[in-house]
Amino acid sequence: MTNDFVYETYEYAGTLYEGKLVAPMAKEIVDKIARLIIKVVKGGTVSVIRIPKDHLNAFMNPELELKAAELGIDEVFITGLVEEVCIYINSLGFLERGFRTNIVKGCTAPFDEEKGREAFSELTECGAKLVDDIPDDIKVILLLEDEHNENSEEIKSGDWPPHNMKGTPGAMTVKTIRDVLEERYS
Image (tube, rainbow, N blue to C red):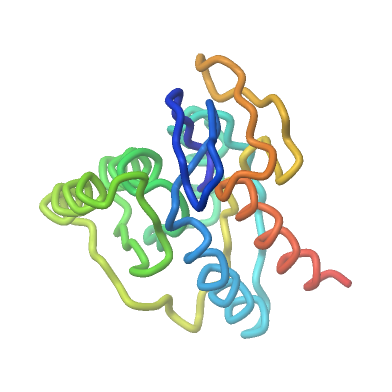
């Protein structure tokens, strides 16, 4: 999950970002998530189901809940951005629907580290688990695909106004993960 927005100006690594996603730690999780995906797709027969996500709450797309029910999914392992927004909201969504909900440590990033810790504290109180890895026998990847990529100049999320994502760390995560999945089919 990588579709979170801010409206303020941020400076990171000498670059000023205005109205763009800036999660400074985002670059640190991309390779870790890619390794998890490689591990799963090389481990056997795995279905990759792409579900469009155009809102910070992935359950706004009814296809997510329908696919999970259809496939008998009862446990999820969550990675991506941003801990105190999408990870938090969607983890609560899965917990409310009775899913065993795991957040993979080192494969998420916050905008603000303190708010990320607070979000995880609340999530663990609600029943989410922080785990170090994913099981070797995962058979389905539900890829909640944002409607943007590394070149997106104007995107929209739910009722939020359009934002420029081109070249931001969050947008760059999309390409790396997409490339790993595309290699599977080459």
